[in-house]
Image (cartoon, rainbow, N blue to C red):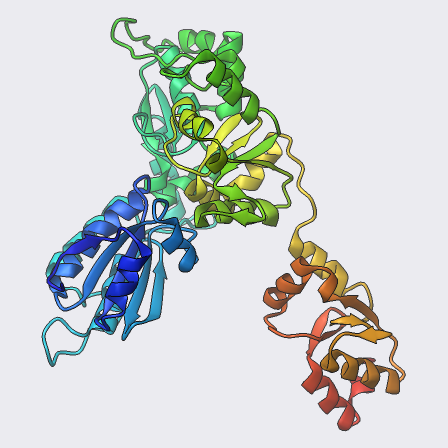
Amino acid sequence: MVGGSVKDVQSKGELDNVIGQGVPVIVHFWADWCEASKQMDQVFSHLSTDFPHAHFLRVEAEEQAEISEAYSISAVPYFVFFKDGKPVDTLEGADPANLANKVAKVVGSIKPGEPAAPASLGMAAGPTVLETVQEFAKENGSSQVENQLTSGQGDGLEKRLQQLVGSHPVILFMKGSPEEPKCGFSQKVVGILKEEKVKFGSFDILTDSEVREGLKRFSNWPTFPQLYCKGELLGGCDIAIAMHKSGELKEVFRDHGIEISDSSVAKGTEIGGGKGGISEPSGLSATLASRIEGLINSSPVILFMKGKPDEPKCGFSRKVVDILREEKVDFESFDILTDDEVRQGLKVYSNWSSYPQLYIKGELLGGSDIVLEMQKTEELKNVLSEKGITQGESLEDRLKKLINSSPVMLFMKGTPDAPRCGFSSKVVNALKEEGVGFGSFDILSDEEVRQGLKTFSNWPTFPQLYYNGELIGGCDIVLELRNNGELKSTLSD
């Protein structure tokens, strides 16, 4: 029944039934661990009131794997819009104004006869939603960092950063808060500071992109967390762990007059030396804890996921697999669906409630949202480098090398002597007739190159002919050049 409320979907059959009614349907794929999902859920709820003639449905992406797979969901929040029983639009990410206007476009205006506001205005959902949108923007920050901190607005940012790093005797710039860390490295440094019984301030860099990017340049330190004492950078997670283990951190705090909390007040997190800083798990048997410790240290990079890398069983796991492959990182995996003891125990051991979980050198990096964000900001490369994880050649670099491996290069199906499609055969014959020497690559022999080249060249079909690293075109263009007598000259200029 349509009527201005959000309904949770419990099965694919239920969703298909609602969509099949032909009424406009908006589906919000969300996850309990994702803060952005919770924020967008407020907007979603308001929209359901403003547009009572549409169905507003929620799908918990990880719990409803069949539905998530059907719509290739690999990140949250994610919205799918249906009209007349068919998907007509999607939206990925936390963009309240865009969501409001996409809803208006699919459903129609709030009042009959009134056109929906243009998407650029962000006003289709009425004043209630606008208030939520403004609140969301205020909480998450919308400013972008200037490339330099040396002039204009950059001077103001540098001053702000100086004030922040000096705002507490000890301050930690981290992902999340001390009570709810959003990455394993931040979690560890919080645990170390509690073990040291040090009072400290913190700043959640996920809430302010200007501070997040600016601090990397300000401190000349590319990753987070970052720990400061009396305005001076001590370092990141690895340095904090090393200083803690050697006793140097305690000496630094003492030398700088840092106040130590009373042991009866401070809630210290025990740092297990063999676990690289993960708190001692409670409620786990010694046997299970030992087994989990062995698993997370069984490979320099290991992904605890649903399914296998070649057959992921959830979009979030697939996303992390894709990222690791894009970064050319060798990794092992463990399918948590095959072992419920490990699946439940690891949540307790790592204090991380969802999957996938990515570990580097025995340390929890985080889940899909953290890994995706770190890849976008290049922070993942920096962490891998710091941990001594070597990366292979990137796909883009490989494609560039292949394209430039011969002045005239043909990417085709099969080989020049044995083409595997008529279009490839025609291009080979045209080049041979013109007496043009060329190199070739059989895209049927390498799926990564085949799919990657489509994106790299923005050309969806094969064959593809290149000259001096530049795309000439496909079969039709090559034949047209030949028929006009321009092919040889084009490939020799």
